[in-house]
Image: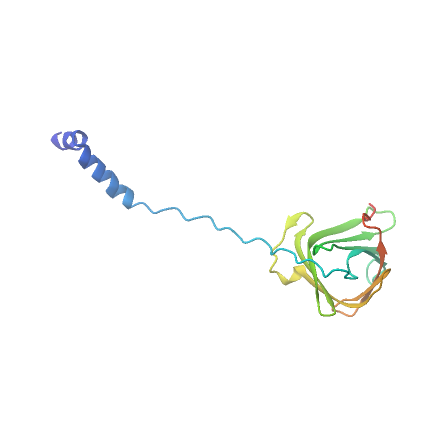
Length: 163
């Protein structure tokens, strides 16, 4: 009984005991904050790639028509939408956003969101490179890494793929 009275009646002893117990506690780890994607770099003034570009094509092994819309903004942001349109079926699509830039004669698209969800932006699957063959005012011709040619026509600034 006397010991318990000693601890409860002497506030300095109680304070010292509290400090000792508290110093043994492990501080919680700070939550890991992932760095966001890097900011987009604006295109050079007058860059012929800026605009909305629509490609409509058939691809071997794919039933239906592929429609691809590249939206390359002057501020370096991009939107990429691809839609598979098949007869008597609802269209299927992919919608990506991120940044674009030129690397020599290549167009590079870096996706930061796919179908509205953030992606692992360091994953190489979200970096697409196309060789630019022609970027006249009304036509854009690109070559994919596997050698396929994509020919796109320029569309009005607010154009979107129909559903």
